[in-house]
Amino acid sequence: MSNLGRRGEVWFAEIKGKRRPVLIVSGHDVVVELDRVIANITSQQTRNKYDVVLEYWKEAGLDKPSVVRCSKINTIHYRELLFKIGNIHEHDLKRVMETIRNYFSY
Image (cartoon, rainbow, N blue to C red; front, side, top):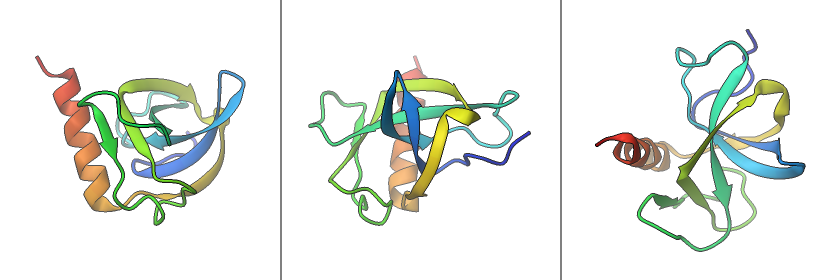
């Protein structure tokens, strides 16, 4: 299994033919074969309560203020990860993971 893509890392990935920033949210124990669970990152405005504004977006290697769309969770093959940009701050990661848990709870 590849070590590409660990929880909290920000990568550019090939998503539907476009290069987009994504956040790896799967831990090494959750990775199924060579897939990674990701959340989309955007520079667009928040749309709902499941969007998390990154307070430390510069430290994560992003060029613009950014939002993690916790309601936009996908699985991609690790080969779709093009290159690593950085890591999100622990504070932001904690907020993202809590929001994802809330999104999937009922």
